[in-house]
Each structure stands twice: as C-alpha cells, then as structure tokens.
Length: 535
Image 1 (spheres, rainbow, N blue to C red):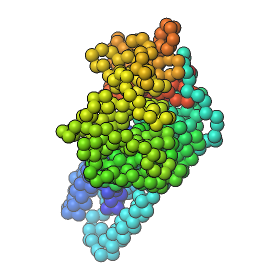
Image 2: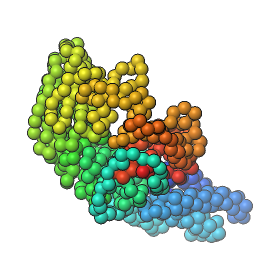
Image 3: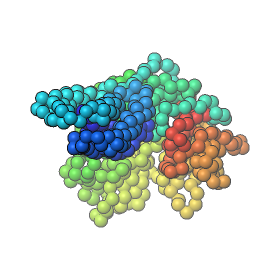
Image 4: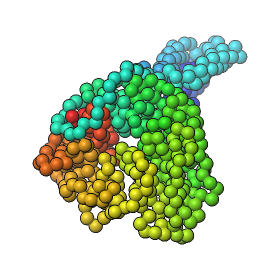
C-alpha cells in the first residue's frame, strides 16, 4: 500500500501537461490524496481492531478499494487520452501501477489474520518497503529528464516546386482536418506552416495535404515566425518549468527538416513576424535598459551578430525592430533625435541611417511599420519638429525616404496603403503618389481582409456574422475584383466554434497555392479544427 500510494502521488512532484487533450491533474491529485487518507485509516483500524470486528474492517476497506479503483481508472483514461498517439509520459503509467498495488495491498490487509507477525512492524520489513520505494522514485528521474526527446514525433517531405499566390479565387479547393486547435498560419514552403498547441505542420497549398510535421506531444508551442521568402520556420516551445528559456527550433519550411535546436534567451520578447528576415531572427529585450539586439542565424541558430544601441538612446516599443528581406531597421530615440538605423541582416553591418529632429518634450519612441510584402516601410517619428517628417515612406528597393503626399496609416502591400483620415472610411491609395486607386467598397474590404493581385477578400459584414460563425461554423466571404466586375460571395464552412472565446474568430492568409481560411477559436467539443483552401 505504501509503494502504491507513492506511485499515485508522482503527479504531485512532476506535472505533465498535454494541453487540452488530458484530464485535469487536480482531480487526479484529489483522488490520490483520498486514497492515501483511506489507506491510513484502514491501516490504523486494521492494526488496532479487536478480533471479530470484521464488519468495520470491510466497510473501511471497501471505501478505500473503491477510491483506489477510481484513481486507477482515472490514470487509465488519462493515459489513453494523453498518450495514445505516442507520448509516453510518467504519471499515468506509474499511476496505474500504483492503483493496482494499493488495491492488492488493501485486499491482502483485509483477508490476512490480524494476529501474530502481521501486527508487528520490524526493521527488515520497513527497510524493504523503503528500498523498493526509493528504487521506484530513482527510476522515475531519468524517465522524467528524458521525456522531451521521447515526445518528438516528426516527418519530413521532399522538395517540390513552389506554386504562386493566387491572383484571384472563386471556390473552396480543399478542406483539411487539423490534429488540434490552430493557433497561427504563415505562408511558407509550397503552401503554409500551421502552429498547433504542441508543434508545427507544413501544408501543401495546392492540395491541402499535410506534407511534414514536427510535434512535441505534451509540450506547449508558444510562437512561430516564418522568413519573408518562405524558406525557414522558427518555432518556440515553452520550458517545462516557469522562468526558464524557450526552446528555439529552426526548420526548413520546404521539407520540415530541423536545422538547429537551442535556447531562446529568457530576457527577450517573443518574436513576431516583423522580427525575421531571410537570413536571421532579430531579438529585442524585454526592458528599455537592455540595448542589445542579437540576431540568430536561420542556418544553424548561432548568434550571427549583435547590434548594441548607443547609451544615450532609448528603443522600447512594439515596432522598434522591423525586418525586411535582407535588411533590418532598428529605431531609437536619442535625445532630440529619432534615428532609424538600416542594417544588412546577414552581417549586421550598418548600411544607412535616417535621422529626424524631434521636440524636446517628446517621450514616445519612434517605430517602423512594414508592408506585408516588405517592399515599403513607414518610419514614424512622434513629435517631429517638421510635421511632414512625422510619418515618412521608405522605398526598400532604392533605399530612399520618399515624401508623403497623403498621410497614410497602414501599408496593405503591392504598393498600396490606406489613408490616415479617421473621420471617414479608409481609401486605398498608391503609397508613393497618394492617388486613390480603388473605390470605397474595395478599400474597406482590403482594410479588413486580404489583398491579392487582382482581388480583395473579406468577411461579409452584417447579419450577426460572428454569432453565426460560433453557432454553425459558416461564414460568407466577399470576393471583390480590383477591376469593374461585380463582387461575388463565397460561403465557407469551418464547423461550430467554442463560444467561450472570441479572439481572432476568422483569419485569411494569402499562401502559396491558396488563400487559407481558419479560425483561432477552438472547435466545439475539441474536434473539427480545419483549414479551408480557396482557389
């Protein structure tokens, strides 16, 4: 009974997480504590009882056996649900063994005579129990320390031709079930990469088939970014214990092969898509007094270079770092100046700098916002002395800072942007000249949807579309050609969603081979998470 109780309480020492696929460990711990309490009562009653009091003995033993069987069943179900797809773990298997051991011990204690040597404790018996318990606990140590490597399940694919991003779409080309809730989707490889709770998948844009996968079952994937050229994917996995460094994996987006595995420093913010180039992933400190910006090579994960901010400069803010294809822009407030430093992403060598004079009372830092295709960037210098320099446009190809004909708020891609007039719906303009390029309906759709070469896609607003999506999983998209053709509508079915969340209900991603539609809200009932490809 002592050995079994120790095995049941392994979960108190090591908490294994398997996302939403496992049972609550709290219930298992309460059951384990109940078993220990009842075992203590059985042992005390059995040891102190007078001969002939069998009814009391069997009543207490019966309750203890029921609790032990319930705990064993809990671990059996937990093992089947959490580890059925290959993740071995420690808690559930040992819990099953412990539950069986406790049950057998209780039955032996109830049927053995209460007189003679069974009433007496001795050093030999105590030593045997202690040694066996210590051996079992020691055996759990290497299992617990090596479970991360056991949990890896991955598959790679061969290189194929990369299809282009569609210029227009008119139908649902494919629907692919996902093995878990979808947290993020990025265009990469011959389609897209998908972030799950425990890893990442590579999806073919033309067929929707899963080409490769890398999953650490039982782990918690925290973030994912993909290089602008779609050749590399960087995955961050949270540490088993709070306060440690994330595990950073760099994978080939085409094949799914792992290029490197290392640690992502705990003092850096989680990367975003604005922090990765075709060459490196640029880090940024959590606090303003951390002026180092390390760049991690996408080839092997090593630190390729580190840019150190001058001592008299500040660079906090969400948009302090902006990554282009082969350039990095780092903004900083240096006294009465806002500086925008342009670096070569492969070497870290400074290749340019743009300086804007600002008023002395300015406290907000400058920032950089890039277009989705990384062809243009907005340089924002709050409190600029000259108002026309508060927001300026950087042409990445030429490296020139262009004068702003019209105030712009957001770069859409393909040389287009929305204006900054908040008094009326945004207009879609040429970012370089400021000329209005498309009518109001198309501009509004592009602002909230996705822009293709010859079409914009967005959700048809009105008729309580979010409620309809949550209840039925159905949503209607508006397909608006950039020419004079009439806009069309396309129904999409994602399946009912969990109504407890409304964060990122519908996402559109222009990927290679298809426009991918998905919801970051979990599917109702834990199943039915899908990607839908429009072609």
